[in-house]
Image (cartoon, rainbow, N blue to C red; front, top):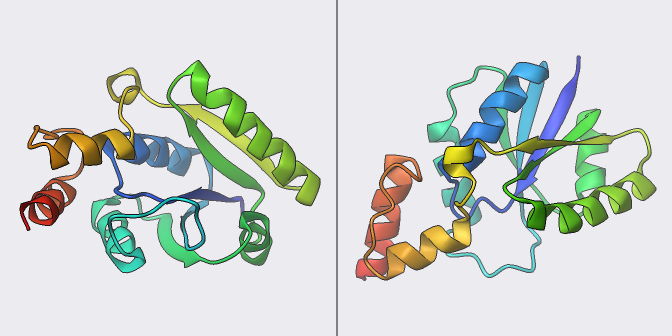
Length: 158
């Protein structure tokens, strides 16, 4: 069975993330969305909220969501994964993602990194931008799942 890990913070999940996930699900027998515990980012939503948003938004039967602590490569090995899925929005993403993939290759040469380009209609979306626009009262309709849009409105109204 070919298993891939799609890791991230997903704070919050966007339609761009879901686009990458949908396409990855067609390429692998199973895709595990890994919600990272340790991150340098200050998150708006809790781990449980981010996991719930993902589980509620995923339609593919061969996709599951798990929270993982520590190194991505340790998680990938524990799940028997052969690949890591990374989404690219623009050329500017590539340099950072390339460095990550080379470090991951150093940690485990048997796990490949697969880069998928986000569909053009989502190429400008980032979770950071979504949070900023929402915090300022702008519309994020169609850029995130409706559940996430409502949760962001509640966060920024209080």
